[in-house]
Length: 387
Figure 1 (tube, rainbow, N blue to C red):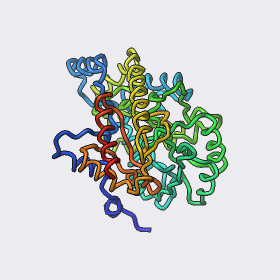
Figure 2: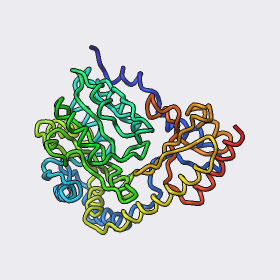
Figure 3: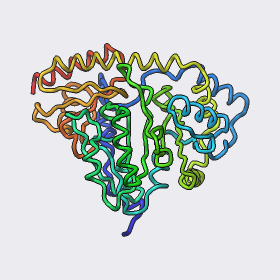
Figure 4: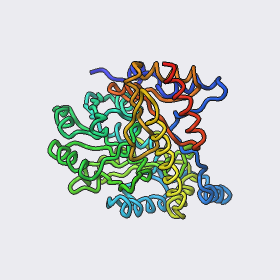
């Protein structure tokens, strides 16, 4: 089988998210429910720690795997919060969660391997698999099952070529949260077929209604099967800092990921890592304040949607997205999003960007103030009343 990154790039369409943002750039008065980014500033103590590092000339290369003190802090955090017993030598600091994802996929699979992706899925999963020489197998997660991966559907999709499963909880784009009982059923299948798992947990702190996050690698017998990836971007509103991390207890696999990282970015930027260290070691008030604010915004958006005709949505339990069902409008997601933008200047992301089973949905992101959410909903309601 012939494979190259260049030829794979030709098969990957331009991001469905960026296309609408490009259209919106030249419009005035646009309200965006599109981009997945907290609207809070990075907490000042984190900013001050990075500035202090700069002033102290901590601007040289960091170790390839990341600052030792940061890796130790991540290790402590993972033991305490995630119940995952990993040492600082099993943690790699990456250029955001995006690089962590790429390293995990590229280091794990071989050309032609099949990777199971619960769908709807984050827009980067399938393209990254294709660029890595793999074959994404998207398994539908149904709305009536709260967008949670069905164990039977998973098992039916496994073949002799299946190598890897990607789990994302809380989910982008649906906000679905997999509880411990859900993950345990999946873990049994993973162990039976000896699969590797990438557990994408970048929204772990944004879970609502008192629910608790469970990490796949914390389950009995799963320690060596799972690569856990995470990021400071969402938890601490540090999207532009580009600091993420991954952990794996599989020594051979970890060394492969480290080697690939060494021949790519080499290391993450040093002063940003000092900011990340302060994020973990400093006060956590901002994390909970942001979560509580997002929960209020979710409730407001859900209330407004329930008052509309032709659309509906189930309650997302995490992240800051709501996956709105538009099937009653008779429009598919691309038409709905493009017309809503052109007619009412509201940006949404068409479900088609998140896989083949999502064309009857659009994603609404709610990291914006309540008055903007209300104004956006007024415009959506007006759009629906005309169509």
